[in-house]
Length: 161
Image (cartoon, rainbow, N blue to C red):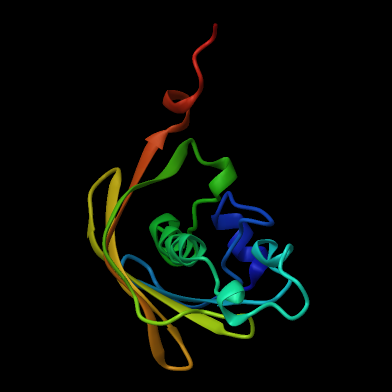
């Protein structure tokens, strides 16, 4: 599944669409997606041409967001051939919480990440995921639990006045 398909499943757009491809998806079970880290990322725009490695470390918040978008793809895919298109849905995907996030090593431009997310529990409007992100076969981040909630879009609209 390429980036065009990913855009149908997630409401995110450049510069916050942080999943490039879906490599494997088992509806209701697991997903594997990739994200290539490049110097063209918005987070590097103020880093000089020869920035130190510490300046080039991919922000951990964006690493979590990218993994969360991967989990979101799994959450919106109901059954084979039946994805919910994010911008046509009447529900909004929200992060409910994260626990047990461990960063094992920095991620740098040139790294290609493999996000693996597994659905550990699902209720009607809430899903829980676990998983990890790998680079060259090495775990760079592990996620013990992410809670994702779906709420009616009309409940999240700002009140008039």
